[in-house]
Length: 172
Image 1: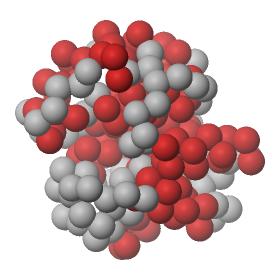
Image 2: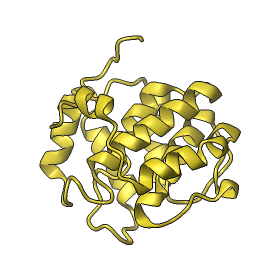
Image 3: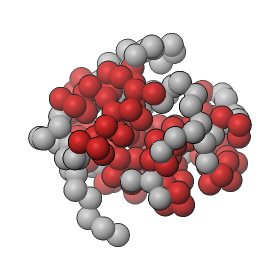
Image 4: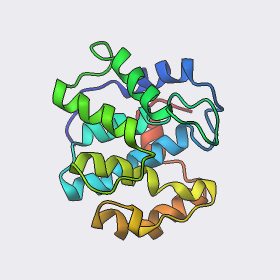
């Protein structure tokens, strides 16, 4: 496995210092870890940029203000990533733009586009079971994501906490 170019534990600590919701809530750390895992499984099959997918998992819900409707939270997450660019987030302009757009647009229901964007959005949608929604295959942008619905939905509804990701992030 290639060495990551980011210190994800440090990024998580910065995010959690400003996070306004319970870290173990519906949009918290365990959700982010499942999104990471979902995104990597999808992204490995579609050729997505896995570094961007990894950062998306951390930032996409990092600036939510509530667990329900929260317009603009994705853009706020992208702006937080921008604030950390150069210190904790190390992407060239093109890759950073993918991260920002993935965060900004992740609740818009888009199903076509760049493979990295689709991997990010599909990864999040595959975890909808945590809030009582079964992922709709017509709202996923890739065949690999559609093939994962049953697996990912089971993990979401059972509150699976991916130990390997939480360990990478240095969470208890």
